Length: 469
Image 1 (tube, rainbow, N blue to C red):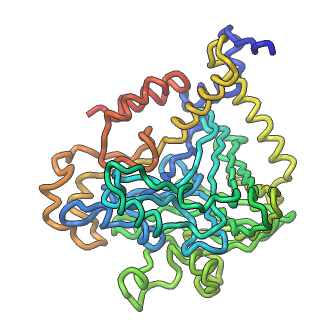
Image 2: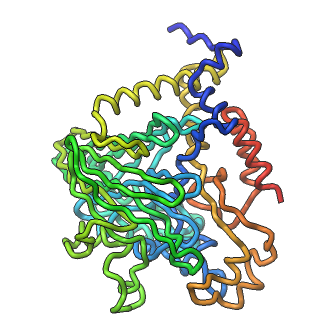
Image 3: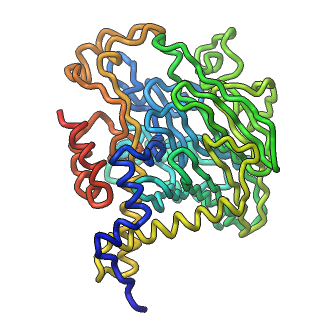
């Protein structure tokens, strides 16, 4: 097969659609990077969420608490995106009919549980991304059997440091290919208009059901006694075979999430479930984990019948024969379009954006690189670009606490990071991975800037400037 000819003329390069988007974003003409994969896969058990006396982050905010407790500093989710301020978040939630909890974020071992320290115990893959995130692709592999949370903890705790780790595949939960591939893709028509395509495949030998909840929510910015404004979502009027979730945001204005197939829409609040965590019998009914109770326990009164809230989801129940696939299409947009969209319009956009991504990476690769090496290079860049994260950390506020919350323990004034009082960050940064820093380690970010400069020199320079201490 003849090798593809690499575009070398600067005039020709300027015509590449993705390079044009990068230039428009750098010149602040079009904010193509306003939306991106800035949502972490894990925000529980992190230093920022640790308000313990002695810096025991893993125990202070555990995975078990994460579904029920509102985060202070950032949000998390599966295959998720947010705006660059992380006011608005989108991700997928899943349930296979057997798990004890709704799958909304990745699970892993804490530093004290793993025989080799902290370790994520999930299988997810960053498959593709352009530097402006005009196209992105993500794969999550979800078992059809009950997720072996306890087995992973107990077996790894039993093993010694010299033993191999017990991984998810070692538990037998993927035997006979009993799992779903959940592929999530994003494509932008404009900086504020995103199409979402979720492709679910049953790889198992039997029919299998999957509950899919494409979920939209606001980061909780109102519970801390600083800004009481709370944005609201509401159910809009279905149109052309689509359900719709609507909201007006103080910063971003009016938005809609159109959902193909008129699924029911669920609403709750991104608020801590004080009833479950603290035994507060007067606590709110509509809370962060209401979708868990609604889907798994059938508690229909867990969601708001008025169909308003700060967290919303479309409720899809898929039944897939062996080897079968189903595609769900959505659109998150600021466009005032009462008709939503056509599935063919969505698919045509993805075809176009994938072609433009092909052109961009073909141009980037050395001309003598094999096709296999080109794919490796491209997915390596995808991993780097997907690992951007909204990182919010106000050290002074973290040390003294929020006016709407109990005071932090006095020990923290002399503990971890206490001498970093100059640090304030509320920006998108390049993370070692979105399983989170154990603490703020800026030297990792500096190493990322070298390969980042190959695909997006503006972002690489911003990272060096914003994170030079």
